Image 1 (cartoon, rainbow, N blue to C red):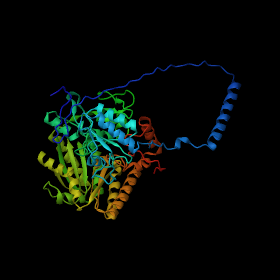
Image 2: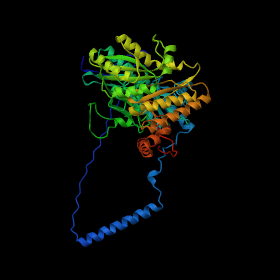
Image 3: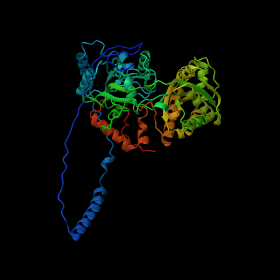
Image 4: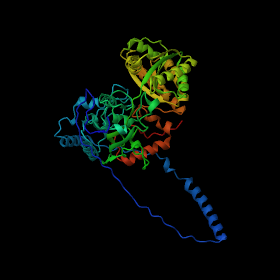
Length: 561
């Protein structure tokens, strides 16, 4: 099967809210300017004149530097303060009335139902305080988004995009003075499939797992390899620079998987970041300006994603006496260049949870465990990768190495890892899980994981660990039952983050910044880089209406470690 499958293709999605095909504005703005070169006449001066001029220039320059810097504050060090002037309650009410009038012919487009606005500003997946929005709008097209943005701008009312609601750092919380939540769930269509080019155009509410199901149903041997939470959608994935278990082989959302995006800017202008060609060196890569911006620079309404061929895979499981040996084994495996698609760590506590509450029917030794997913062109290449890995892990104390005997067992092994979170949450009845992640260079991972595990044990919290350790990323789920334990968890997470940054790592490998990690950005990136981010934000969104309070650190002096 080849060629182009045209717009309006419904997703393989049982619980889709509404399968609406909507035209999308494609406005590409170009500008040009002519630069004229000027030449100045050259004068030939005597040696004495040149010497006199040089001396005078040097003296005046030194004097200017001395007097200019003696008592003058360096204004480049003054932090940028983002705007915080927003709509009054009366203006919020006027904005809502105008939204209802604008979408009066669509009864499903605007909601002020208290349960609806509260649900869109709260998540049971994290510990950040819930803040309700004032109104939720469900656009069906790019044109609808433009209408909402223009009304938000008119009344200076903050606006937050919402899609799969799987984020863990408070990305879609409301704003205290009143805000508009723009829910992209009605814009969930696959618009075009270009099998011959290995790419696909879709709307932001399309779920990555539904896209892959659709490709499989149509017999197209391609898939989208970024695999965060199963219900994550393309718009949110782009906006947080997501990744998942496949990052070892395919990289993250900040690589080349998002080829272009159609974006509504805070001004209401619609841009398309680039054409569909696989590569381009035409100016800035403006697509990447919006990747990881967490909805603070624009609202995504259409995305072209890159696809890749489906290849045969198999799975192996091996256990270790401690987490340091497991992560040291991963480091050595990755240096061999064998066909690894994923490497997942599940620590002894998580294995205990899987044995007690899992549904696989397999009982594992309660030790720190690695799950390897191999990838290759045939069965022989997969088995050869398994042989090489078994040899390496054995040198690091690995035992009980099991290579899946067939595809069914491979699927069973892998589902054990993918379903680990639900088993972990059942370990402490009535407790809530605080999930966090950090990432470091792979060579630093053994130290980070080992020290963090000791820290968690000394805190007396139950906190199983798991992670995509093939690329240095790991997660901890801290289970808490009361406010005192929440405070302990907060301190453990803070130490984990500082430890990761000190090892040349990051405060978040894939969850994003949102509310929960913004206080660490200066320590990780430096004040200059953070101020550059704020400069871009201020230029594109001078009224700071798009998702305010997220990503950018508060204006408090901080020092980089």
